[in-house]
Amino acid sequence: MICAIYARVSTRDQSVENQLLELRAFCTRMGWQVYQEYTDQISGSKSEKERPAFRKMFEDAAKRKFDVVLVWSLDCFSREGDMQAMHYVQRLDGCGIGFKSYTEQYLDSTDLPGTYFPHCHAGQARTAPALRSGEGWSRPAPDPKGGGPAGRSCQRSD
Image 1 (cartoon, rainbow, N blue to C red):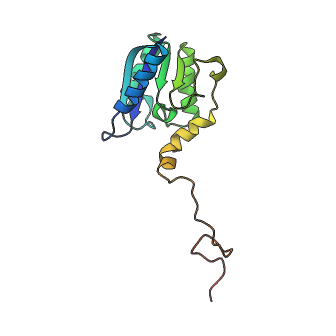
Image 2: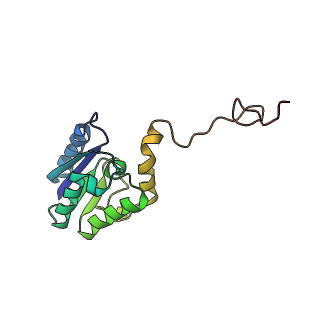
Image 3: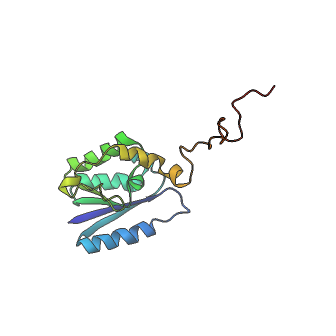
């Protein structure tokens, strides 16, 4: 199988090299030939037009230069939300190109049972940075005395 590797980091302070080392090793174990490595240093929430390597990967996919796109994770592929991530995967599928996430083994269209993955996961890719940093949907702990969030009473203090 001929593979395209896509790796992305959000800032210039980060490096794609750790992703690439693991993805190359995976290709070797699988007996896959790496056609090209496409790398971007830009936010995954940016559109295809703003990510040159991502755009080039799709141009090459349309020419069937490889059989599968391998990514570290869905949030490295796209953080544009459910519909857009699915759109990208469907575009690859329309070109006869598979999609595989290295860290999320259930996101694998190279294996018949994994051909379609739950689209709700794409939404998680958009919020992954906040969840990893401990932000996200956390709420203050409730007051053990039955009031509102800790430090705030639900009763009036006249």
